[in-house]
Image 1 (cartoon, one colour):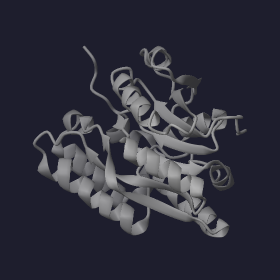
Image 2 (spheres, rainbow, N blue to C red):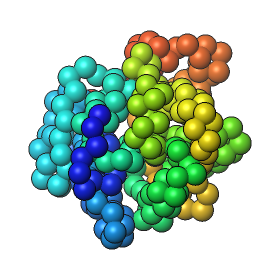
Image 3 (tube, rainbow, N blue to C red):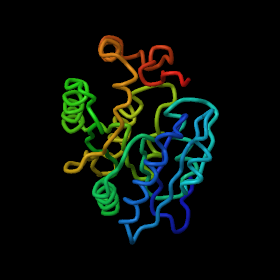
Length: 249
């Protein structure tokens, strides 16, 4: 990674077949970025071997497209970081909306230097009538995130040099890569005398589409599998909850 002259921050969005969600994500992101009037940012969409119009949709909405042919969320995030020019890196999921206040606060604390990396709490855009999975589970995750200082993959921010120092996101995992990244970068922050911070206040808004794609039973079994066999995240076939999508007719 080499810093580009005049680029203050880079927003990196990994995307596999995200032509449906990208336009609204990029539109809202552009509105949030416009409020950082004294900072220059760029948006990178990592097309992770999509078979739809992800790349062209991204370009049409002003993003720079990086192609990563090997599928994997960690590899896609790292590929975007390799091409990024900003001194601060922001990782955003393709189905997630970042309120202006969160982006502004993250940029501010990174600029001040005391904070090296972090994330934010989240909520679903809808609950679809599923109170437990749509409302209580996100609240429980937010408690875990704030208590143990672990960033959710929907929004992660980091100083460029710390990202390089910790080696980026693990590429041998198909889920939970943000947890392992959080643990690694927290150690780097500690060595550098910086803080890893989970932002309070505003929350990022992420899609609840998986609540529609999967039954309550499948969601429950997926969560139980992670609890009983955490190393399942190393196997693509055991991470269907994150990768399987309903077929389009």
